[in-house]
Image (cartoon, one colour):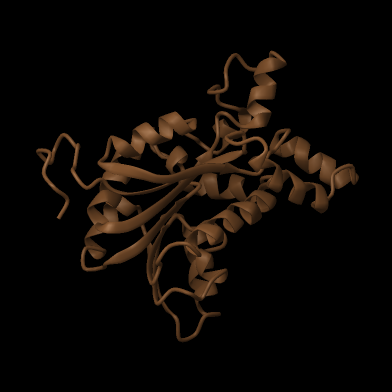
Length: 261
C-alpha cells in the first residue's frame, strides 16, 4: 500500500509527546556523531527539524525529504545557516539516488523512518549503494521490546509486543522492529552492525505520558531520569538503534560474495 505522505505529515505534527521523543532521539544521535567522522553527511527524512539545526561540525550536509511540509520547513531553516554547505532535495531516496552518486558520505542518518516504509529492503539497498566501505549509517526505530509495550502484553492489552498500536496505524507504520529484526534487516542487505542500543525508558504510551506531563505528575526531571534509566534496563528503551557499515565481505545475494571495494 502506498503511503499517504500528506496525511502522515498532518498526523505527525499533532502527536502528543513526540517533541519530547525528538529531543531524546537527537541527544542520542549527537552522542553518536561525536564518536564518528561526519564531515560529509546525508540525512534521509528530516521531519520538522533537520539535524543541521543542532550541529555545525559537518562540512557538507545533504537532506533528502519526500514530504512537502517537511521539505519546505527544511528549506526555510536552511536560510538560518548562511555560509553552510547544505543541500535539501525533495523526493523519495530511491527516486533521487541518481542525484547522490557523485557524493561521498562519511555518515548517513536514517532516523525514525525505516519502520514507516513498505519497502525497507529497497531503502537499505539504496543506502548500501551510497556507502563507502568506511561510511557509518545510523538507523533508529521504535522498539517492540520497549518497557511500555511489554507492560501492555503483561496486562493483557495486546497479544504480543509486535501488535501494531493505534498510533502505529495512524502514522502508517509498516513494520514493528525489535533489535533482532532490525539486525536481520540490515545484515540481509550486506551491512554489519558495529554498535547498537536503546534509549529512554518510557513506561506508558505517548498519550499517557503527555497526560502525566500536563497534570504535573510527571516532570522534565523525571524524563531526564528515565533517559538515564536505560543503562539499568538495557534494551527496554522506547526506541532502538543500530550503527552499521558495509560488511568487508559481502553476503548479498546479488553481489556474488565479492569484496566491497
